Length: 348
Image (cartoon, rainbow, N blue to C red; front, side, top):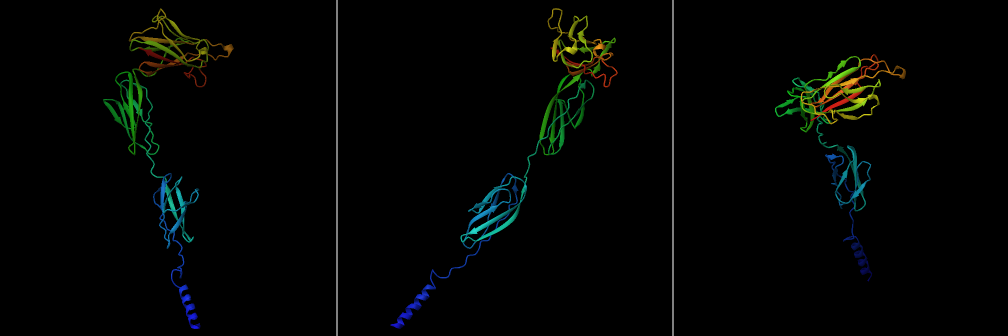
């Protein structure tokens, strides 16, 4: 009996050391691994892929993307992140296995601005005042914000086209013409602008003095038209100035009296003897006369000299008249031709 009892104890001890309840292998921490992406772009989602390993499997992944955003914990092996600005960022991946063991790894990720869309050029030029049968110069003022203008093409009509930033062209007939400027930048983008250019039969000219108090500007009427005169601005030095059409044809008529007291803009259409709008025949030479007022020395007016005026075409059927009323003729900046400014327009 005693011998059997000893055998039972030994067997029980041997069972406790083997089978499923035997020795358990120690846990191995995970190994954190990821490859930094090479094409991250600001404002575009960038993909990060975990390649970490563990003897029993990674259960969670914590990403710190190195910017101002919070850390992100994910269970899957892939995630995305969008950076707001281009820069170099330190990205850290921390992985955890089933036993709670952790491991981390960091890499520098470069975030670029990416490809920027090309901005097209801006086509522009200053419309010159052209005279028929005379070289008229056109200069491109076009710009390109992110490169340079490489091609410049001018179109003056079906039979005239020129290349270059500065070109000349002649018109044979007085009229208004459309000019198209097309420019191309160094990336092939184009832009065009169209402007109306006036070719006049005569250039801007000084009007003719008539005595010491008057100046006459003569308008050439090429086609049957009414004549409309607009007071654009006044900055008189002398009071009592007057604008009128002298006799004999059409009837003498005052257009504006005491110009200094007028409030622009004001419009006047020349009349016939009945008071109706007058139609002038083609070929008419129409004189428009400015009469200087007399200075009131006691009232503070400056001394008076001979009035002067410029007549400048602004289109084939319109002109600007700039008048200096003769006040303070020896003063600094005189004559300034800003005392009275008028526009004259032919209305067919």
